[in-house]
Figure 1 (tube, rainbow, N blue to C red):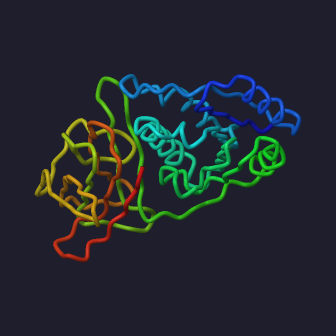
Figure 2 (cartoon, rainbow, N blue to C red; figure 1 turned 120 degrees about the vertical axis):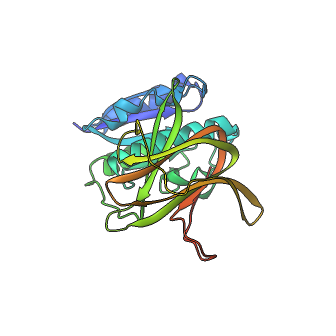
Length: 256
């Protein structure tokens, strides 16, 4: 039986209970939780193990525009989504249900913009069944992005080139937050030691009206090597990509 995990941004037990029952009527093993807004204790990681389980085939998020108003909620959802997609792929199916019918996908944190947005719970049953039973789509990405976090060592982003790509240097910048440490090493885990080639701290990058503070190194990266940066505060936008000494640098921007 396909498993569905439901995250509700608002504590409406009746609505969530109805959604759980609807999922089960469509032959889905459904469970879920109420979102806890506590970045300091990294409460966003609470459902991560369940979402990463092999039998979890769909993530359903319930929330309105007002539930998404706080930057801390948006950032927590961003981090959780990146953690899930880095393990299961960007094509892992997500459905967003807004009972008020006002949210558009383009207003969600960038990694969630591929979600199917529904405006009523009533329409969700067949959509959940269909999405949960689809083969997981393989989405080729030009970059890798992952999250490593706990209250002891903080929130680190892992960045690197996608399959078939190589970068001769890398940079990462944040808006609304700051980077205070960086490193490089094997993909998948924070390095204990790192040799950084020509490290740069606190570069200023402007993209339109958004100002970023960025760090960079000249280490060569491939699929087996990554760049790690620790982010302090609540980022509102993140930019990263290969670090080159020209004005035509390729960059990936994720808005939260």
